Image (tube, rainbow, N blue to C red; front, side, top):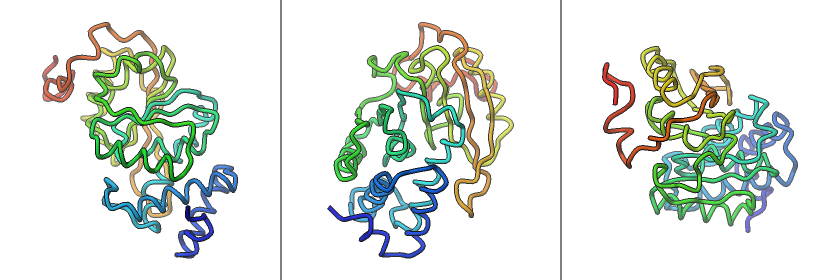
Length: 249
Protein backbone atom coordinates (compact mmCIF):
# COMPACT_ATOMS: atom_id res chain seq x y z
CA UNK A 1 0.00 0.00 0.00
CA UNK A 2 1.36 3.40 -0.96
CA UNK A 3 2.09 5.68 1.94
CA UNK A 4 0.72 9.14 2.41
CA UNK A 5 4.25 10.54 2.14
CA UNK A 6 4.81 8.85 -1.21
CA UNK A 7 1.56 10.16 -2.62
CA UNK A 8 1.78 13.77 -1.57
CA UNK A 9 5.40 13.93 -2.69
CA UNK A 10 4.07 13.62 -6.25
CA UNK A 11 2.92 17.22 -6.10
CA UNK A 12 3.82 19.89 -3.52
CA UNK A 13 0.46 21.60 -3.99
CA UNK A 14 -1.34 18.35 -3.21
CA UNK A 15 0.77 17.94 -0.08
CA UNK A 16 -0.08 21.46 1.05
CA UNK A 17 -3.78 20.98 0.31
CA UNK A 18 -4.01 17.73 2.27
CA UNK A 19 -2.14 19.30 5.20
CA UNK A 20 -4.47 22.29 5.02
CA UNK A 21 -7.50 20.05 5.39
CA UNK A 22 -5.90 18.58 8.50
CA UNK A 23 -5.43 22.00 10.04
CA UNK A 24 -8.87 23.25 9.05
CA UNK A 25 -10.78 20.29 10.44
CA UNK A 26 -8.50 19.00 13.20
CA UNK A 27 -7.62 15.72 11.50
CA UNK A 28 -4.90 13.41 12.73
CA UNK A 29 -1.92 12.14 10.73
CA UNK A 30 -3.68 8.82 10.42
CA UNK A 31 -6.79 10.45 9.00
CA UNK A 32 -4.69 12.45 6.55
CA UNK A 33 -3.08 9.20 5.47
CA UNK A 34 -6.52 7.73 4.76
CA UNK A 35 -7.50 10.78 2.71
CA UNK A 36 -4.27 10.42 0.75
CA UNK A 37 -5.11 6.80 0.05
CA UNK A 38 -8.46 7.92 -1.36
CA UNK A 39 -6.63 10.29 -3.71
CA UNK A 40 -4.30 7.47 -4.71
CA UNK A 41 -7.21 5.14 -5.47
CA UNK A 42 -8.90 7.76 -7.63
CA UNK A 43 -5.74 8.36 -9.65
CA UNK A 44 -4.84 4.69 -10.13
CA UNK A 45 -8.16 2.93 -10.66
CA UNK A 46 -9.26 3.07 -14.30
CA UNK A 47 -12.79 2.25 -13.19
CA UNK A 48 -13.12 5.32 -10.97
CA UNK A 49 -16.58 6.74 -11.76
CA UNK A 50 -15.56 10.39 -11.88
CA UNK A 51 -14.08 12.81 -14.39
CA UNK A 52 -11.92 14.34 -11.64
CA UNK A 53 -9.27 11.80 -10.68
CA UNK A 54 -5.98 13.71 -10.62
CA UNK A 55 -4.89 14.18 -6.97
CA UNK A 56 -4.15 17.89 -7.35
CA UNK A 57 -7.75 18.50 -8.48
CA UNK A 58 -9.54 15.81 -6.49
CA UNK A 59 -8.19 17.11 -3.19
CA UNK A 60 -10.36 20.21 -3.72
CA UNK A 61 -13.26 19.00 -5.84
CA UNK A 62 -13.86 15.82 -3.85
CA UNK A 63 -12.16 15.92 -0.45
CA UNK A 64 -12.47 19.58 0.51
CA UNK A 65 -15.98 19.86 -0.93
CA UNK A 66 -17.07 16.87 1.16
CA UNK A 67 -15.40 17.90 4.40
CA UNK A 68 -16.84 21.42 4.35
CA UNK A 69 -20.01 19.92 5.88
CA UNK A 70 -18.05 19.61 9.15
CA UNK A 71 -18.45 23.37 9.45
CA UNK A 72 -22.12 22.79 10.21
CA UNK A 73 -21.03 21.68 13.68
CA UNK A 74 -23.83 19.22 14.34
CA UNK A 75 -22.19 16.55 12.15
CA UNK A 76 -19.46 16.09 14.74
CA UNK A 77 -21.91 14.40 17.12
CA UNK A 78 -23.97 12.18 14.81
CA UNK A 79 -23.68 8.41 14.74
CA UNK A 80 -25.54 7.11 11.68
CA UNK A 81 -25.20 8.71 8.25
CA UNK A 82 -26.30 7.65 4.77
CA UNK A 83 -24.84 9.07 1.56
CA UNK A 84 -27.46 8.58 -1.16
CA UNK A 85 -26.27 8.38 -4.75
CA UNK A 86 -22.74 8.07 -3.41
CA UNK A 87 -21.14 7.63 -6.83
CA UNK A 88 -17.38 7.57 -6.36
CA UNK A 89 -17.87 7.90 -2.59
CA UNK A 90 -18.36 11.62 -2.04
CA UNK A 91 -19.22 13.20 0.31
CA UNK A 92 -19.67 10.13 2.53
CA UNK A 93 -16.21 8.59 2.25
CA UNK A 94 -14.14 11.58 3.45
CA UNK A 95 -16.70 12.26 6.18
CA UNK A 96 -16.39 8.67 7.38
CA UNK A 97 -12.65 9.25 7.72
CA UNK A 98 -13.20 12.53 9.59
CA UNK A 99 -15.88 11.03 11.88
CA UNK A 100 -14.42 7.71 13.06
CA UNK A 101 -17.07 7.24 15.76
CA UNK A 102 -19.87 7.37 13.19
CA UNK A 103 -21.26 4.67 10.92
CA UNK A 104 -21.63 5.69 7.28
CA UNK A 105 -23.57 3.88 4.58
CA UNK A 106 -22.61 4.65 0.99
CA UNK A 107 -25.70 3.94 -1.10
CA UNK A 108 -25.73 3.61 -4.88
CA UNK A 109 -27.70 1.51 -7.33
CA UNK A 110 -24.95 0.97 -9.92
CA UNK A 111 -22.80 -2.10 -9.37
CA UNK A 112 -19.71 -0.56 -11.02
CA UNK A 113 -19.75 2.40 -8.65
CA UNK A 114 -20.39 0.18 -5.64
CA UNK A 115 -17.45 -2.06 -6.56
CA UNK A 116 -15.14 0.95 -6.87
CA UNK A 117 -16.14 2.33 -3.46
CA UNK A 118 -15.62 -1.11 -1.92
CA UNK A 119 -12.06 -1.10 -3.27
CA UNK A 120 -11.40 2.38 -1.89
CA UNK A 121 -12.72 1.40 1.55
CA UNK A 122 -10.26 -1.48 1.59
CA UNK A 123 -7.34 0.57 0.26
CA UNK A 124 -7.87 3.42 2.72
CA UNK A 125 -8.76 1.04 5.58
CA UNK A 126 -12.00 2.85 6.37
CA UNK A 127 -13.67 0.52 8.87
CA UNK A 128 -16.70 2.60 9.86
CA UNK A 129 -18.35 2.65 6.43
CA UNK A 130 -20.06 0.12 4.21
CA UNK A 131 -21.53 0.04 0.72
CA UNK A 132 -25.16 -0.81 0.02
CA UNK A 133 -25.83 -1.43 -3.66
CA UNK A 134 -29.54 -0.68 -3.99
CA UNK A 135 -32.03 1.95 -5.04
CA UNK A 136 -33.00 4.22 -2.20
CA UNK A 137 -36.67 3.28 -2.62
CA UNK A 138 -35.80 -0.40 -2.20
CA UNK A 139 -33.77 -0.20 1.01
CA UNK A 140 -36.18 -1.03 3.84
CA UNK A 141 -33.34 -1.46 6.35
CA UNK A 142 -32.61 2.25 5.99
CA UNK A 143 -36.07 3.53 6.89
CA UNK A 144 -35.99 5.95 9.84
CA UNK A 145 -32.52 4.68 10.76
CA UNK A 146 -30.31 7.74 10.23
CA UNK A 147 -29.31 10.90 12.03
CA UNK A 148 -28.06 12.49 8.79
CA UNK A 149 -28.59 11.90 5.10
CA UNK A 150 -26.03 13.34 2.67
CA UNK A 151 -26.72 14.15 -0.99
CA UNK A 152 -24.29 15.67 -3.48
CA UNK A 153 -25.19 16.21 -7.15
CA UNK A 154 -28.00 13.66 -6.98
CA UNK A 155 -31.16 15.24 -8.43
CA UNK A 156 -33.37 18.36 -8.30
CA UNK A 157 -34.09 19.28 -4.72
CA UNK A 158 -37.70 18.07 -4.44
CA UNK A 159 -36.53 14.64 -5.58
CA UNK A 160 -33.63 14.60 -3.11
CA UNK A 161 -36.02 15.50 -0.30
CA UNK A 162 -38.30 12.62 -1.26
CA UNK A 163 -35.39 10.19 -1.31
CA UNK A 164 -34.05 11.37 2.04
CA UNK A 165 -37.12 11.89 4.20
CA UNK A 166 -38.04 8.22 4.79
CA UNK A 167 -34.46 7.41 5.81
CA UNK A 168 -34.31 10.02 8.58
CA UNK A 169 -35.35 9.56 12.17
CA UNK A 170 -37.52 12.32 13.61
CA UNK A 171 -35.22 15.27 14.22
CA UNK A 172 -32.68 13.97 11.71
CA UNK A 173 -31.04 16.19 9.13
CA UNK A 174 -30.54 16.21 5.38
CA UNK A 175 -27.47 18.02 4.05
CA UNK A 176 -27.89 18.74 0.33
CA UNK A 177 -24.89 20.07 -1.63
CA UNK A 178 -25.90 22.66 -4.26
CA UNK A 179 -24.20 25.14 -6.55
CA UNK A 180 -25.67 28.46 -7.68
CA UNK A 181 -28.95 29.27 -5.98
CA UNK A 182 -32.14 28.69 -7.97
CA UNK A 183 -35.17 30.47 -6.47
CA UNK A 184 -37.68 28.34 -8.37
CA UNK A 185 -36.07 25.10 -7.26
CA UNK A 186 -35.85 26.37 -3.69
CA UNK A 187 -39.58 27.21 -3.75
CA UNK A 188 -40.34 23.72 -5.03
CA UNK A 189 -38.15 22.27 -2.30
CA UNK A 190 -40.08 24.06 0.44
CA UNK A 191 -43.38 22.81 -1.00
CA UNK A 192 -42.09 19.25 -1.22
CA UNK A 193 -40.72 19.50 2.31
CA UNK A 194 -44.18 20.38 3.61
CA UNK A 195 -45.53 17.14 2.16
CA UNK A 196 -42.61 15.05 3.46
CA UNK A 197 -42.30 16.46 6.98
CA UNK A 198 -39.06 18.34 6.28
CA UNK A 199 -38.34 21.97 7.12
CA UNK A 200 -35.39 23.95 5.83
CA UNK A 201 -33.20 24.81 8.78
CA UNK A 202 -30.52 26.82 7.01
CA UNK A 203 -28.96 27.60 3.66
CA UNK A 204 -25.26 28.35 3.93
CA UNK A 205 -22.82 29.56 1.33
CA UNK A 206 -19.53 27.74 1.84
CA UNK A 207 -15.99 28.03 0.48
CA UNK A 208 -14.46 24.55 0.58
CA UNK A 209 -11.43 25.66 -1.43
CA UNK A 210 -10.03 28.91 -2.76
CA UNK A 211 -11.46 28.70 -6.28
CA UNK A 212 -14.92 27.56 -5.18
CA UNK A 213 -17.77 29.71 -6.42
CA UNK A 214 -21.45 29.52 -5.55
CA UNK A 215 -21.23 26.47 -3.29
CA UNK A 216 -24.11 26.04 -0.85
CA UNK A 217 -25.20 23.55 1.79
CA UNK A 218 -28.98 23.27 2.17
CA UNK A 219 -29.84 21.86 5.59
CA UNK A 220 -33.25 20.33 6.24
CA UNK A 221 -34.58 18.89 9.49
CA UNK A 222 -37.24 16.19 9.78
CA UNK A 223 -39.77 18.04 11.91
CA UNK A 224 -42.72 15.66 11.38
CA UNK A 225 -43.22 12.04 10.48
CA UNK A 226 -43.06 11.31 6.76
CA UNK A 227 -46.39 9.98 5.43
CA UNK A 228 -46.59 6.20 5.09
CA UNK A 229 -46.95 6.38 1.31
CA UNK A 230 -43.24 7.18 1.07
CA UNK A 231 -41.02 5.90 -0.33
CA UNK A 232 -42.98 5.56 -3.54
CA UNK A 233 -42.22 2.94 -6.17
CA UNK A 234 -38.84 3.01 -7.89
CA UNK A 235 -38.62 5.85 -10.39
CA UNK A 236 -41.77 7.67 -9.32
CA UNK A 237 -39.91 10.53 -7.62
CA UNK A 238 -38.34 11.43 -10.97
CA UNK A 239 -41.27 10.49 -13.18
CA UNK A 240 -43.88 12.31 -11.10
CA UNK A 241 -42.12 14.84 -8.82
CA UNK A 242 -44.14 16.02 -5.83
CA UNK A 243 -43.62 19.59 -6.97
CA UNK A 244 -42.51 20.77 -10.38
CA UNK A 245 -43.86 22.58 -13.43
CA UNK A 246 -46.91 23.52 -11.43
CA UNK A 247 -48.00 19.92 -10.93
CA UNK A 248 -48.30 17.72 -7.86
CA UNK A 249 -48.22 13.93 -7.52
